Length: 392
Image (cartoon, one colour):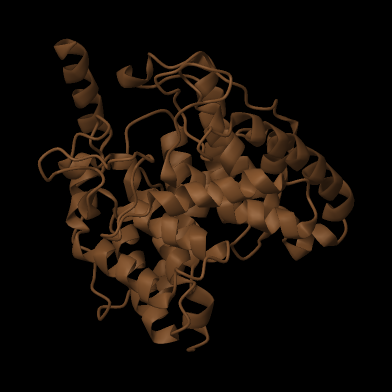
């Protein structure tokens, strides 16, 4: 085992981007031209890496720590990573190249088989269930899909695929109301383990889809929101997974604020989007203040080759996930100056980690590590840009 870990660490060091400079402060605003240039390089990199069939990467392991997963998980991660990139693309200003990439990516996603369970313990197919559902909901709300030619080409397919995914989500919902990606101690048809952040990711899409008239099971939707709400701790943190007694190990726990920086953002955002009035602007701002106050713990974890080995059990893949949902949470604030402050801080922390070709990565793994990271980074960077450009 020590040999395997050493090889894995060596692989990580070889793949890691050069050490990046500190992010600028909110007062040191990154010029909009540089932000736009950076985003274009990311789009160019993603579109150049897209396969002819519309997917990204492949369904094969690329590092030693992945070898114990079900082979199905790599197909599911490929599908989920592509969905995140497409979700980002739909939020960007359209160009002919981007439109072509969206079309090919949607065709691949809509034609892909429904994600199923990999084996008794590995249910990473849930990541594809969650993020394809998010993508489909976002696409259905995009005005371009109400107009030709996308209306005829895609809208019916999107609605049919969404119905399949929603039915599968109900089957895979844990008994406490959430979704996870591994099985718990009891192996059963209905999973017994869920996490706050995977559940929170899909909650707004469920509420949005319900309003649209899609076949969202209302008890499933309300149980999911309830799961996220019950994971909230008095400190402002969110439990990793719902437990009667939060995780504690002498002060350096993943359920402490410093281990919950990304979960705070997605938890607050999801609850706010679902209409939870307890998540007001003050709560969102407090969560964002904590995010930047303790940001060094995300910096230390980024590109670590072993999950949860950093302080407070942070993992590398918390980084761009956390910044994406911090940007979405900040976007809910009514005060435009406060919103702008946080969005500028987020952009600085994202841009400092960009690779030389425009790509982003925060965890060593197969190609899905690059697609989800670059997709999340693009979502984070574009929030508030229009208002900045208009001088609002």
